[in-house]
Length: 297
Image (cartoon, rainbow, N blue to C red; front, side, top):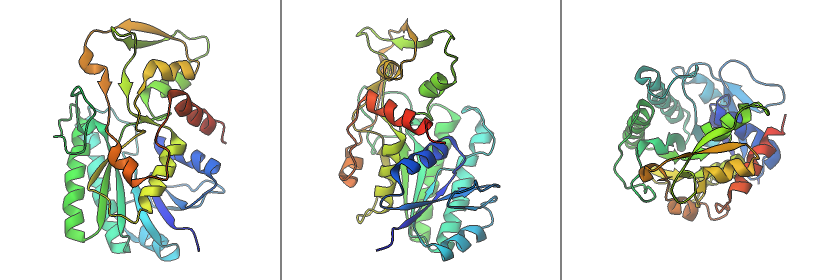
């Protein structure tokens, strides 16, 4: 039986670059990712060019050659922008709208769009659940919340399944480990908030290899997907533990505002849908996934 094919929109982004490396490790097991690029297809990459989402023809053509069971929409603004830049953040809305239009015209039955845990806003003292009210605190989170509303309306209008993935921190695409990777070996230690219990911030993370397996599992799920879904490992990790596992020098900065210590996701619904993926992890395992990907050329 041939492996199903999945289109990934946004192969040049931070998460896309990590997942392409993760797939070299995964070997394309269970499903084959077909990567979308705007203007250049790297040598040896299974993919297609689609520079302008307002023109659905490149996706329709790719779908006719290699039928997709699902499309993963991880595209964003073509140029880096601050998360408080409301105008730039609108790209997260209109690009998804255009991708959904193209998917509907191409006849792709399932679309998974990258949302963010930023839609929830500040911590609540417990892990966020999908049914919680959205209260984003910056333009990025607000744009993702608007995009989710759009996706729900388009799903009803087009009769296709659309699931917004509220992704936590992806190791290597996040600020903490991203800054650690850019830090010079002889540079100053990274500053990290440390709370009265001696621990740093606790966050929901996922390694790039586990993320890839999770996306493939959701794309192929025989069960209908919900309109939104938290996506991270089931066990939050402390940022100081991540830095220790990565052997990155850091120094504590006393912090007493406990509201910022625990901002995490309840991923029990994800675990139920992806029973074949091990979503239990540790800081060391997360860092190992990230560094293994970095070793891929």
